[in-house]
Image 1 (spheres, rainbow, N blue to C red):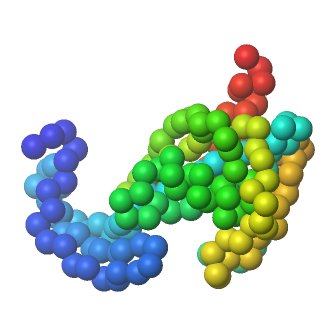
Image 2 (image 1 turned 90 degrees about the vertical axis):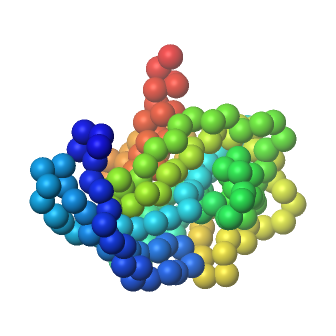
Image 3 (image 1 turned 90 degrees about the horizontal axis):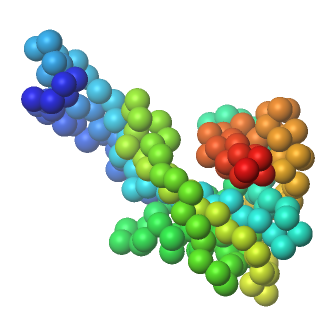
Length: 182
């Protein structure tokens, strides 16, 4: 057994939804004791850092029910079964913003969003020199979004004021700030 590994002895599937699956695992801990782990299984997601030709960052503002408030975020969405992250990134960019890119998007990083209880892996891409696709952004049927285009300085102010307050978007702003300093 690997250091700190927890061996699963039983899995109870609780919920199988459109976005997540919930299960409770019985585990044996490294010291031989037992415990329960509540786990969220997620197919993975992408986030896109879209930069216009005018050097503005394109964000979407949307209501987030778990928080009971609206947040300004980078465009993002979940991977569809069998879909490559880069394909998902381009699709989500077009659906949520009405923009596309002709040049390849640059891979930035992949990271776990909440490893204490979920297996969701987020893949982040940088999209530069955006072009309008010729039709308005649609989003999903149950998604109501508004575009917000900001300079990096304005985005940093949004972070300070907690209008940008989620991990992927904070990561994106920090990444752009680091690029600017190089």
